[in-house]
Image 1 (tube, one colour):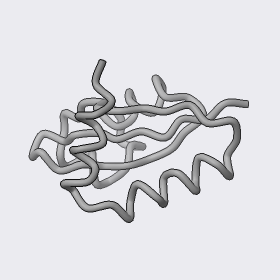
Image 2 (cartoon, rainbow, N blue to C red; image 1 turned 30 degrees about the horizontal axis):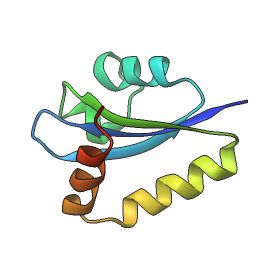
Image 3 (cartoon, helix red, strand yellow; image 1 turned 135 degrees about the horizontal axis):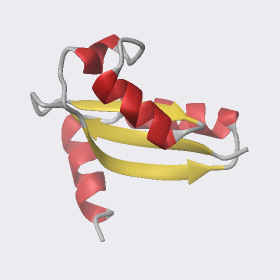
Image 4 (cartoon, rainbow, N blue to C red; image 1 turned 45 degrees about the vertical axis):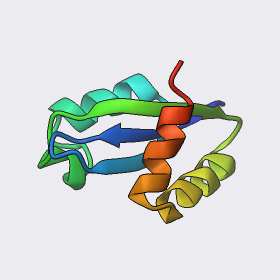
Length: 84
């Protein structure tokens, strides 16, 4: 099963990093449902800035942890370098 690691930009311009096996469903939760992450629930709407497919859950969690260690500037530079 494929997983996704993603970076969101919240309405207050903060960044949120997460992982999921269903990106579309998770984005819907972040923007619309009570079951979304508390952090994004109070900072709606959120916009997907970057996503990456990975082969499994362990890889997704490791990549998510890597992103979370980065500074805001590092994340923004990474996003800018991957815009097509």
